[in-house]
Image 1 (tube, helix red, strand yellow):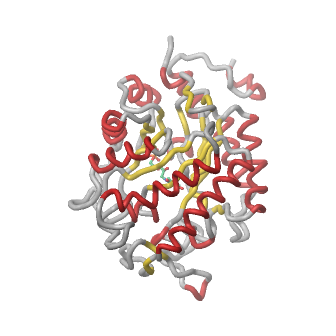
Image 2 (image 1 turned 180 degrees about the vertical axis):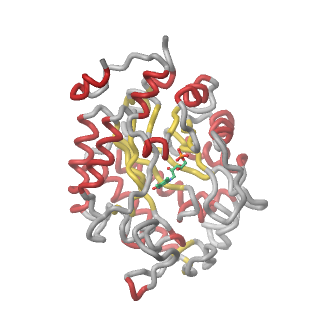
Length: 358
Ligand SMILES: Cc1cc2nc3c(=O)[nH]c(=O)nc-3n(C[C@H](O)[C@H](O)[C@H](O)COP(=O)(O)O)c2cc1C
């Protein structure tokens, strides 16, 4: 029987072996606070690739030191960080997975304590190594220190930093890049009227609020060339009156398509405090809406945990790819398990483990 979950997908010059992918997930596992990949990253991303994913997207990776959520985040603002990622990418390739990386700037949500391994939360004081955050407007995210407003010249520098990190991604061997435009981080802060009150050409109308992201996309495309897929992760709704809605995000996705983006990874929320109706597949309708309205491939994500649920999303044309986050942490072999559940033959169960699959 054929199953869409195990149907290859081609975007530009890259063919993915299946549509069960792993979304970016911060590990906060950099050892020397220098943005460099450590043994944890090799084992963690390696095991997800070995588990049969079509693609594994490496966690939010800072394009500058100030772009990091915490000091334990990966970075890609220098060549040493690039070189430290090469063995991680090589091993993912040896297991047949496409290797992606999410390039990110945390904006007003930067400079925090890491999510685990400390008794503290919130903004990291400058006395402990924290830094002044920046954003479209000097409005704090609840519970965090206030950012300062970026100048137009600084916006241009951040566009260049994304481009330089995209170039290093290619040099490290990554097959594709994802630009982080979601979850209340810098690019989302510009997109949303709830966090962008600028009066220059980067604020006001939807076109103006999208300008920064589109500049990042164009600069990234110029670095990676025509054969490499460029994905963008968006928060399709702010879940708040007066914030971004599905229709706004569908319009933006159409612009992204015109600017050569190949797939929109559809998440939600994160820019303001909101009540989110979390439940199985709770964001999938947004992936479907964007796919239909903007006619661009989408990835669905959010409480997807079951093989038949994943297959159903694809079979009903709600999305082109499914991303399993926390389920992949619980079971890095989810794609192999899903193939068994769907009774679908795959030829990439690790040969080393053949006695487990007799
Ligand atoms: C530990 C952890 C770290 C995460 N880090 C990132 C990240 O770096 N970038 C991002 O866009 N989303 C991040 N997310 C969100 C996930 O990519 C995903 O969208 C979310 O967990 C919902 O999917 P799930 O229900 O399958 O886990 C993270 C989630 C988790 C659990």
